[in-house]
Image (cartoon, rainbow, N blue to C red; front, side):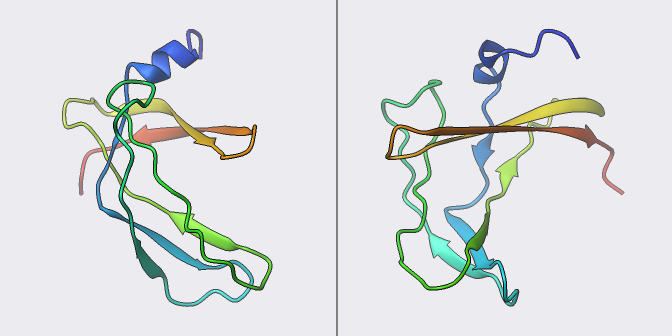
Length: 107
């Protein structure tokens, strides 16, 4: 795809669908645990975006899987899109990942 830029992603911000994050153990999968969140929405970039805190509970083990749900705008047509995920850490690190997704009509 052409024209995929940070500016493009900044114009199309998805909202979180819930006030919580789900998490579970990476090595010993089991039930998902709900972690309530208080999102930061003031002073964020792009405007209208929300920053979600990572759970700050120290645990033993090899890691945790986290997932959030977002609201897909109802005016998007079926088709192929690129989804960008950005994670700004408290350290001087920024993690960025993208995924190709396809929107289809609800069954």
